[in-house]
Image (tube, rainbow, N blue to C red):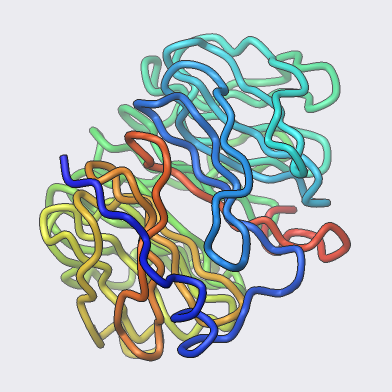
Length: 320
């Protein structure tokens, strides 16, 4: 596999894009290496720790002080310290926990093997409730008192009431929905379909799909910029980041990144971070300039990442 090293990365960032807010970091979990890396604003890997075999979905506590990681092979969720990346404790979860979302009291985990979502008490780790969802549930999103779960094999998103886990709707989205993201105002849910090469948009008021638009070859990750102006989609077979205008759902650019990109997040300084699964690095993209600024080396198989805000800043969009 290609192993690209970072060259003059910090200098390029300072000239082309504004810095992260003080204290912001990017958290990256690498499935093949079994590690978690914390990336600092300047582009350096601050810490990298082993966390266990094949980490998958990642979520943050609403106060931004804890990192939650699902482990489908190990059947547990780990709680990590935001400052060090070290594991504080683990909680057993039945089945294969994959996607994960967290609010102030509960943890919601999709169970890839049993077509359900599991609700855990965050303090005790006890199972509070389970609910049946679509086949091979992958990504989850939490907002507005609702939980959205992508069913990769059933071609739909299940919408549940977060409080009692009632199914509110099942929305067909396309072939192979995998990742999803809510707009900052929570009015739209964006869902990427890996097998139909498109993205579905769900109106969260009516719980109906409003449209589907092309989203690159095998779209695997999706994020919305903090201002809601752009939707970012990773195209695995295109080795690119698709930048879309959110208002018109038109493609503005396809920015080349590393090999087999998957997870993506956007920061407050106009940059996107893309986890490149096969090239074992993270691309940093200037969204307005529509170009890759550089790559940061991490452990083998990075697939999932998240943006850690400053400790006092809280985490937008995680509480229901």
